[in-house]
Amino acid sequence: MVALVALLLLPLLAYVWNHMEWIRVGYEMEQLKREKVVQAEMGDRLRIEKASLSSLARVEREARERLGLIPSEGAVVQLEQAARASVAKAAAPAPAQDDLQRSAPEALR
Image 1 (cartoon, rainbow, N blue to C red):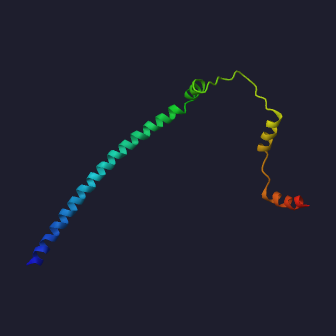
Image 2: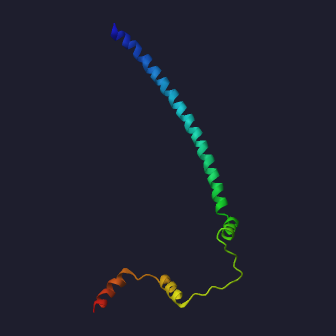
């Protein structure tokens, strides 16, 4: 008798469980859709903010107001001798690994 009741209730329990799972997944999908909309709106706001922060007019205004910089009026910048040497050294290509290995024995002599 118990086996017969269990046999009859088993499909009903499987149907109820399946239906409840379907409802739960539906709620989860709705929540994810709402979250997707919120994230898309946030992305749009961030793109707009990035564009406004990186605009040339804003950068110039910040340079003038916060940093006290003024636009150049054709001024010429001249480097001192020591600065020229360090710039030239930084611009020179680095020696290749073979050149370093070849010059190492010569340096020991």
